[in-house]
Image (cartoon, rainbow, N blue to C red):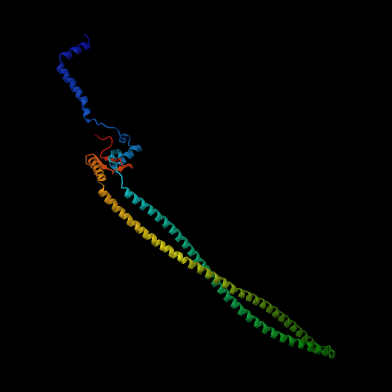
Length: 352
């Protein structure tokens, strides 16, 4: 008899005992089924060294484990939700008015900046004219001082010339006299000291006459130079009134330009005030539109029922255990569908 024949005879001969032993072995194998977790695997199963796992843990720690697996819910709306046509028309008109107001404000700002630039240019030109006037006054004062100094120098030169002319006349008389006396003295007693003294006196008189004549010529040349300087100062002084008249004309032009800019400034101020009134009117219109929208929302029973239904759905999603957050609904342009997001309190691989 083989081993399997003996084993089969033993099992069939003692079925209860072998059944209990088999049951004991199977129970040990069934125990893990009671701790089995059903669900898909998430990023939390990856190694902690990876960036995906680190981002997963950071989101769970800062916001909650459910943010790693948000649930998107879609709802069909019937009838579709539509805003009021009158409210839309008024809103579009208010937006158009606001855009027009902003455009006008930009244009007004550009004109104001241009006016400020022109005013700054006028002020700079006026400052330059004032500097030129001060320079012209300084030139006039300097010319006056130079003229006074030249007149004094001319008078002193004329006095010196008169004195030198008198001295030259006296020197000439003395030289003529000595020229007559010296030959006579030397003919009478040539070897005597009187002759030598007469010759020395004649030479000294001639030298004095030459020096005085040279000094007189220098004074005459100086007088001619002083007269040329005086003539140049006179020409320069004659040009100053023309320069002053030109500056006066420029000042008059600047004054006329400033007077022309003043109405523009007043007009810009009036435009700014008008735009401010328009802005206030648009604000009042916007407030009226908001009040009408509130009234329309209060009167729209269908929209209110849809909102109540959406709120009930959101409440039903928010109240159960395991829901952390329900986002506000987002309605499409057609108004026939809405979506919102549900954030659970557990991770995607958490137990159901």
